[in-house]
Amino acid sequence: MLLTGRCDEPKSLHVTDTPTDSPLVTPDEERRRRHPAVVLVRTTFEWAKSLSLALLLFLVVRAFVVEAFKIPSGSMEGTLLVGDFLLVNKFVYGAEVPGTGRRLPALRQPAYRDVMVFQWPEDPTKNFVKRLVGLPGDTLAMDDGVLMRNGQPQPEPYVTHSEPGTDPVTEEFHWQRDFLVRFAAAQRSYHPSRNNWGPIVVPPRRYFVLGDNRDNSLDSRYWGFVPDSLVRGSPLVVYYSFDPDSAMNFDWIRRVRWRRLGERVR
Image (cartoon, rainbow, N blue to C red; front, side, top):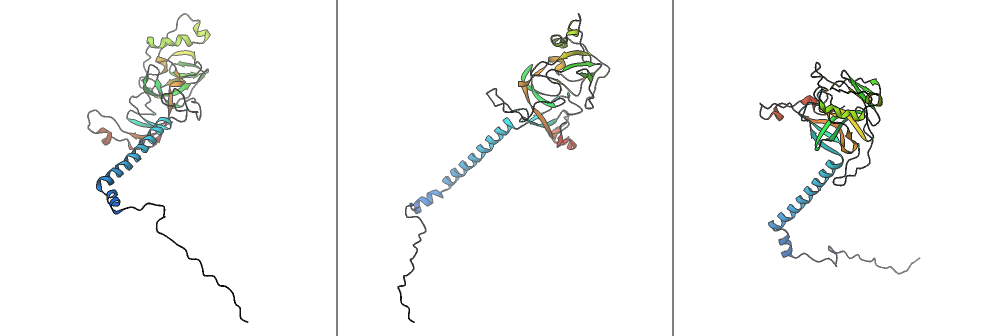
């Protein structure tokens, strides 16, 4: 049986290399684009853009997440040494937004025995690192160098004593009189010393801090409480450390404490 019918030819597809509405690049324009001066400008712009983004990221991280600090004194010896470089977690307590006086939400509040970085109340341009031993509402005292918190002696295995045979008395301790508990305040005389003082009560939104090197630490015993607004963060890790020696050149390279690198701060 013969079948007849119409057989349509397939439609052809018209393909062009460039869209009809796109302008063509002329040879002169292509030469201009490849000119060394133009290439240099474009490369410089790309590098500048990359560096700007990297700098912005660095500033954001430094302002809100972590910042580097150096230990300049021996007040925390036993835990931190002169020449230690720390990475400090600023996010944990709520980093301050620069220039606003406001803080981001904190992951948690400072806790008893935290090692804490803060601005020194006597001079906020200086950063101190100490151990937090008194929270708001705590009653603190020291009896022959033993810290008493809410009437209980505190075990402090991290504490060292460089001058155990001395107990100096100084006028700097007399600020404590305004914070003595009632029965102590009723006493006519109060003569606090470095190793014997209190009991005092920590006021709201304030912290009491001590150095782990108890006999060589300028801390709350001398200048008072730390306002919560001056707290900057908590050290995470020792990322670099060297043993300073003023008589040796390049001591920061030649006297590296390799065993301390990467050590967590507790």
